[in-house]
Structures are given as structure tokens and as C-alpha cells.
Length: 434
Image (cartoon, rainbow, N blue to C red; front, side):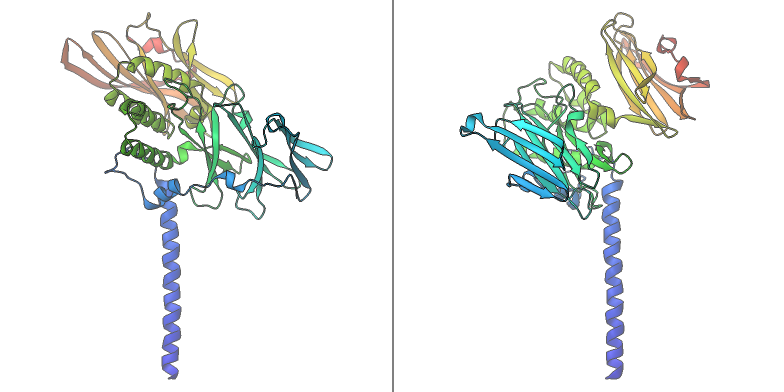
């Protein structure tokens, strides 16, 4: 009996150790799957590369509206929040939402509608104390939805303010949806990219790509994080497209709409090259070139797009973007650092080089790449590769493809090494175009 009890204790101890190891292994595997997945392109229902956990993330979304407080006055630590409407006529109310600490008003919104102002608490940062969310909606059909998130410590911190993004126009809009994508206990949240409202469509059939925000402890604020979570954006898009196809939404949400949606969400998932490849291969509608040109102009203005394609070099952060030169009717490539222009690469217009087109400017593992093509009968496609060294960029090679359209079988491909490497500040595109 004594030995049986001893063996039983050993068995239970061994079982508990094994169970602990299994739990730790599962947690590590889940974390690896969430953070390590970088490339999901296929939107088909039969060949989706999703995992069960990713699918659950998309389906099990919280609504910040479920956390609104109904009380007209609410005290929290040294803070007081009031949301009060005055007046008897519901169509002419004077409503005011205020955040106050002591005698100091930290934030204030005013509205004529009772449901236009709200506040609530949500634990975004995984700490003991929750964060305060202030909400204000203005306008009619195309309303502007403003969200502010405060971390109410002894010194209040405004960790998200949608007004800073929307200074010139509503680039980000609609609901704020909290979700812990990477399962680290700190919530990300999603909103909608509003850049393409009424772009080649009405408000109802415009396309609103997903914008993901992640808390950055270095800045103490929520920053754009689309490049970190492409699988989430693409899985969400796959589900939306699947629903459209199953419900047979007709011409309004037909094949043209679906292709545009796939293109935009690939771009905003950090997979721009795949998006444009999809567009060139599958978008066969009469507005193809016009839509592409106008879309590029809109992308150039969008802050989410800019954040996705930021380039880092030796610990320095650069912004690489295309800008439209109205005087020359051409696109230029602008590289900035800390809002200071480091270089503008002037590209030719159609009158200077027949058929000239900029395909993309994208960051690479070692720097960035410019892809362009030009020509009529004799066609050239060139990719200029710039590498980073000691905080500066250098042109180190050009990949060239060319052929005669009258004799397509006469096709040539080569890589031209640039020795010595050309410093970006001395680079002129015209020196490398025949």
C-alpha cells in the first residue's frame, strides 16, 4: 500500500509536468504562427492559407460601442467625465462631452444630438487600469467619426487622436474595433481607410481597406501596423469576398468591385507588388489605365499607405513616396527624413519618353527599388536597386528587360552592375534611360 501511494504521487507529478510542457509548446506555436506569417495572397475559398486562430480573430470582433457608459457624470481617480444634453426639443439639443481634471478642462466636444457623443473604458494596454475612449460623430451620410484614447495616469497621456491623421480630409473613419491580434495582452484596433470614399463609385459601393493600429511603447502612442499583420487584412478580405459571391450582389458588387477590393487590400497589407500584378493580369475592364492612374494619385496622399512603405537605413527612418508634379505633368519620387527632403528623383513625362510609366517604388531588405518601363516599338523595363550603407542610399545594379514588339521573340534580360556604386544624391534617371 505504501509503494502504491508512492507510485501514484510519481505518476501525478509526471503527468503535471507533461501537461505544463504541452501548454507552453502550444502557446509558443500559436505565437510563432501569428507573428511569423508574412505572405498570404490567395483569396480563393478552396485554397486559403488561413489558420483556425486567424479565422477566429476575424470573426470574434469586439465592438467599442458595447463599452459606452450611460451615466451623465462619471468620476475616475482625479478625473471627471460629463456627457450632458440641455434642451427639451430632441432636434435642438445642446450636448457637451468633457474630460476634466481638477479645474482644468482637458478635452471638450459639443453636438446637437444625444447619440453623437459617447465615452467608455476599455483595457487596451493590458494593465490594471483601463483607458478612456471619447467619441464624437459629426455630419450626415458621410459622417466623421472621431476617437480619442486617454491613459489616465497621474499625468494624462493621449495615446490616440484620430484628428491628427484627418487634418486635411478623412483618411481614417468609421468604427474603432479592438482586437488582440498577436495575443500579447495589448490590444490592437482596426479602423477603415477612408481615402477611397466616392472613388469610382457611390458611398455605399466605395472600398474601405483596413487600417490596423498597434501600441508603440517607444512613442507611447498607437501607430499604423498594417505591415506587421498582413494575414489579418487578407483573411478579412477573403471572408468579405466570399460573402459577396455567396449572396450574388449583382453588378454593383460584381467582378469589377471584387478585383478593386482585392487590389486595395493587397496594397494595404504591404503586398503592393502582388496587388499590381493581380490588377495587370485580371482587371480587363475599359477603365483600366484611367483607374490605375487615378488610384496611384490617391495612394500618394494617404498616410496609411505612406506608413506601410517607410524605409529604414542604418537606424534612420526615411519616407519614400511618389508625388505628382503638376507643372511637368509627371511623377517624381521624393525621399524625406524627419520631414526634410533628402532627394527628389524627377521622372520623365509622356512627351519626353513615349510610353513611360512608373510601376512601383518599394522597400527591399537592403534598401529600395524603382521599377519603370517605356518605349513604343522597342520596349524597356528597368528596375533600379538602391542599397543602404551608413545611413545613405547607393545605386548598385539595374535589371533590364527589353524586346522588339515587331519581333517579340527577340527578348533580352540582363543585370548591369554599377561600379563604383552611384550615391543617391548624384543619381539622375535620365542618365540611365536610352
